[in-house]
Length: 223
Image (cartoon, rainbow, N blue to C red; front, top):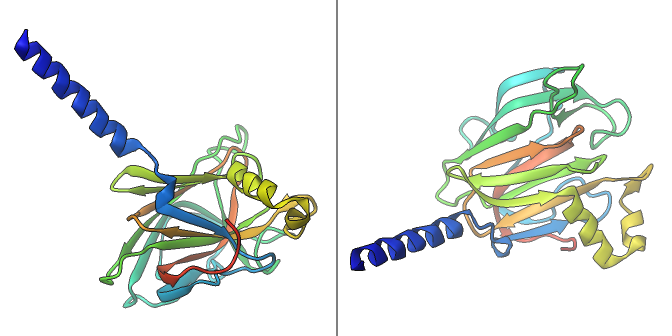
């Protein structure tokens, strides 16, 4: 009987550890929506790069490696998978021209979505603690999820953006609307590690101006 109790306690302790491992603690991340019409982060950085996708051809990239404008000898390597690059037709990209990143269909007939992902690596002693992107034509069920070593550490959805705007009122929201859709640059400031970002949607999540780096001072905006 005593051995059974010990086994039970050990099992419960293991369950508590696993619960702790999968718990997503939002206090480890600060999210800021940059002031309206800002298309890059206003934070200060030890190092930072940006991928605007304008140099890429229109196609589905099974894999694409970016150094965020810092060159192959720079501190950041980002490997995208399942990435679709398309030309801006009207509103999708930051500058209303060039290219932007979106999510592919499994098939044009089923219109089932497959997320695209980004794996990040830094050679700097200062780890990557910042990710930001310009979220264009925001739609229901848009979501971005961050992982470290395969464990989810944070997730943020279109609904979270909507809830932030509710805190500040419709007058603030109207500054970010184009034909009824929200456009904004969102900055994620981490005090925990992350090494993978997943973008997913039930329609088509459209993004541009991916910024990666090690921030030293947070930028403007509200959270």
